Amino acid sequence: MEKSPIKESESSKGETIGYSKKTFWDERFSQESGNFDWYADWEQLKPKLISYLTPSSLILNVGCGNSKLAYQMWKDNFKNIINIDISGIVISKMKEQYPNLNYIEMDATKMTFPNNKFDFVIDKGTLDAIMCGGDPNPPFELINEMYRVTKYNGYCCFVTHGNKESRFDYIKKCIGEDEKFNIIYEVLNLNFMANLINSLRNYSKDHSIKNGMNDKNVFIASLLDAFMNTYNKDDLSEEEIKENKKVELCLKLQAVINKFGGDKEKMKKELGKNPIDFKKMENKNDEGMRKKHCYLYIVKKLE
Ligand SMILES: C[S@@+](CC[C@H](N)C(=O)[O-])C[C@H]1O[C@@H](n2cnc3c(N)ncnc32)[C@H](O)[C@@H]1O
Image (cartoon, rainbow, N blue to C red; front, side, top):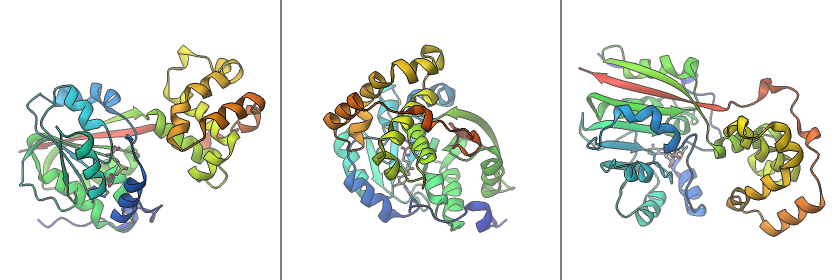
């Protein structure tokens, strides 16, 4: 039976930023160096995924970006990983950084792999990026392509911002009623960087990350928020962080400041002479806050 494409309203509410476009990613990766893992990294995913993998599993990482996922899995003895991305720029950079790993420039919505090739296919953030475009076809194609190249009794999995209401039935519908599969669903905590990006968006008036980073109070409050959302609160009380450890904590987070092009010395100086008024930054209404979670869907392809 022909699969019916998904209607636009089910797929996305319209383009945001340009995440669905190759040109956006090429430009971003040509300006950006280093590595960045969207949502969650291997350490967080490992306990959830390990039981679906064996050292001989053939793994496909779809829309790998400059994530360290494959390298960290490789270090954990999963040596058969193919990484693909639509951006040739990031693929060249990753090949140079990790010459022992396998990187290929390829559009994940039109893969050249044969059917039923991989034991485990993973997408982290690519479905979400493609959904931003507002065109219902690319996300539908991505899900179907990932499913097509997965072996019977193998798994294709999605790590996404989309919760159960928005993605569970959607993924089922895309794969189609005639296919036999089951889906396991889990909620995961976001990593520090993802929490930081969300906090910057929450606190900056126009939800712009760039403006948030340029406003010192917003930036520091976001760092603290992200820290508290990510790490175990039992280790450090909120009061301890806000009142006693704020400067120390911010200095510890210099790596993040540097990553965003901030001037380390200037930042230190500013923090020293100008205490931050955190009271002003407290968000009275948590309703509108972005979520501290991402979601994992593991689809088992059945015969
Ligand atoms: C949100 S990032 C996620 C990167 C990485 N998976 C991670 O978890 O950090 C989305 C990635 O998907 C890639 N991408 C977008 N559209 C694609 C497509 N049609 N085929 C393959 N990759 C695509 C982008 O170049 C980008 O690297």
